[in-house]
Length: 430
Image 1 (tube, rainbow, N blue to C red):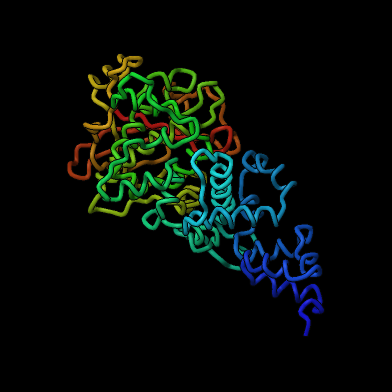
Image 2 (tube, rainbow, N blue to C red):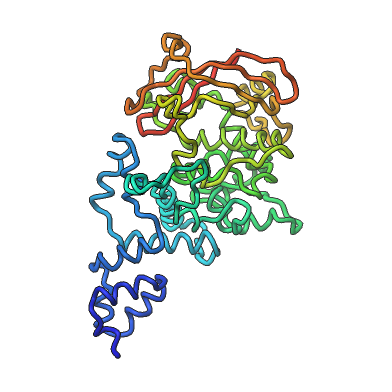
């Protein structure tokens, strides 16, 4: 029996079970097959897409109005065939490293990063209204609810190619850090677009190399992907990576009153500066991983970057951010003398690289927080930057104490939404 003689509905059901390469092979068999699998057959490609990935409309429908508005144009222009193809190519690179991205090929690199972010941003994060009505209850760890998350590699199963993609490195540099007798002598800049070479006749010192490395600007999308992923296995052993993160984090030029000394853009918009946040996350997470070692598993990875990871306490329904309860964390700081020295030598050839001599860490801390809306008039918890009013600003207070000592200090703070819908936190520890 000629398979093309089947009713279109039955043929579509059969073809949706094929992988994307198999579908391409089928389409090349004859003119009728090519016509049936044309990108214009959106019903076929929609069914094929939804057989492998979450329905993006489920995630969009769960967003607040401001975040939803950012996806409105995307929804209108959505093409099931185009989006499926982009994701298949990106996942092929992420899970097997089969896609060769030449050094300097920024377009392919950015396309892969954007596709991976899209997989995360459209991952199903909570039951749909229909599922809730049918009796399904949300759970704290709902990662199994998402098809998308099951397709992404977890941190300790990254290929060198994917680790390099996350951190902006070529796979060759990651491989050199696996213990083959090499070191990453040129961690970021030399292999990235716009990379550098030493000036003829001028020695390339470690300090000068670090300064040149810091001139390389990765895309916001690449920095955001790194933030959502967290530390990778090889990154934890890369002193040059932590040195670069420290130089961005502790640079006084990156923070002032316009961004309230936080990881936000310095234009007063209140939007996240993903490059600076990437650096801060690298510095803090590296120390936090040491603080919790032997006590708990570090909660990081793509599955922890989705919304609704915690359930709303029915006794405190207004606590949309999950503030109230017990938290653990740490604080990290550079000694004041080192901080002043680093910033005083800003334009000097011998500026400290901050690659060695880690900053101080407060150890593992336990926080006991509760909502305290009386603090809404506290001037130190007010912000002049724009915020999103889809959800009300929450104020909280509590105690912070070390896991090893019982002496407690007072904590207060606030949580609100940035203009693009991310959750912003501010803590004051006294």
